[in-house]
Length: 130
Image (cartoon, rainbow, N blue to C red):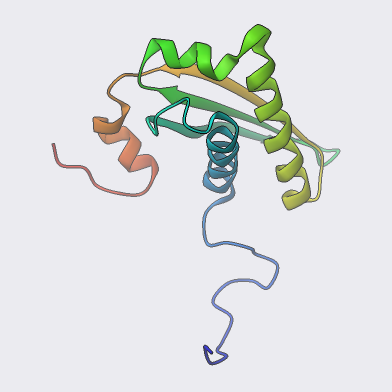
């Protein structure tokens, strides 16, 4: 067992990740769970914007970066049904986590070399030396 110690974060803070990154990871998890092995692990999610409103709702826009154009069709599914289900599942979890209404918008973009993009690592708080 780990000995008890002092709180390093506020008691109501569930993670040390900023909420924007945590939201992106929740969506990424839902993509992996829904797509299983149909899509290689060559995708990532970034929270592009986070807007809070006076009524306490939050509007979150995220971009799903894919490495290949054919992956976009896999994520969309027939008539956009697959990405709709993924968005709804992620939105429900975010609403539960944030304890408020969430309006989640997902945009799929192909960026073949996102893994080598230094900007991606800066977003994560890391340095990238090419």
